[in-house]
Image 1 (cartoon, rainbow, N blue to C red):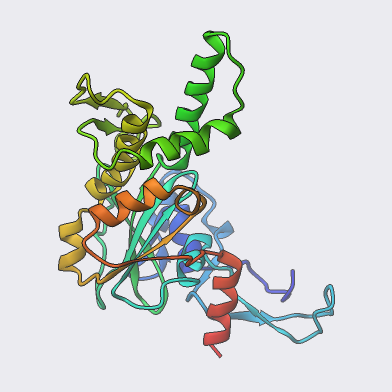
Image 2: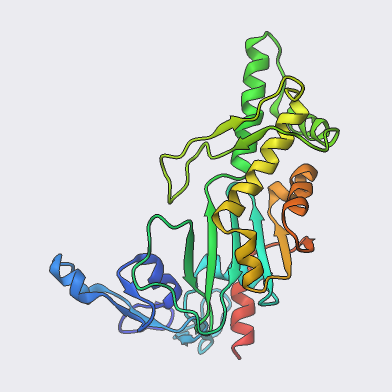
Length: 288
């Protein structure tokens, strides 16, 4: 529409997210699609991420005619680009869900057929590079569910407590407990590679049943779950030297930050907010 192209155009990043796309030769798996009678003539053309799709054919909301238009990029890749400044950085984002992302070495090529049982997914990035991502379904949403459970228990006991008042209280209680032998596997929402996986609690001792002990163990479990998907040893082998922490759950939860720093043997830097819009602008600026 903007460039009056004869056929829609999309980036390798977005094409890969559709499926039935070979990232190595940047082409659709038309043979497979044709066998299912898919109308392959409707598939968009695919271009390199960060390239120019065309120019505006008319003025549009203050943008003049003839302005360059970048090819549509992947939201996730742009979010990472907005904060990943070094190849030796790992990006840890814990918001509603949680992701641990690293840039793979130059020349890396993912397996031709993705393994659905693998906890790590490879995403095409920029300039032929790939990102390795452990994307957990369990992050801040688990903490929110825990807070909701505490509020419900209080209500069942005849007390009315707002969830907004519970969250800071459980964090303060956990800060008073530096260690907990409790082991919480927090996967109440399962995982993409193990959808049937449920949460569990083990190593329960009579002396560690306080709200502080449970909250700290829960925070530690969230970080350990991510590290079980993309182990620290693997990060070290790939040359990771620093972790960039971001996300609302990390920002508001000091206990979670403490557990991140306890588990990762790298310096952890906070405040590196991820923003897809900023990343997209940076990509196009750097492609000049």
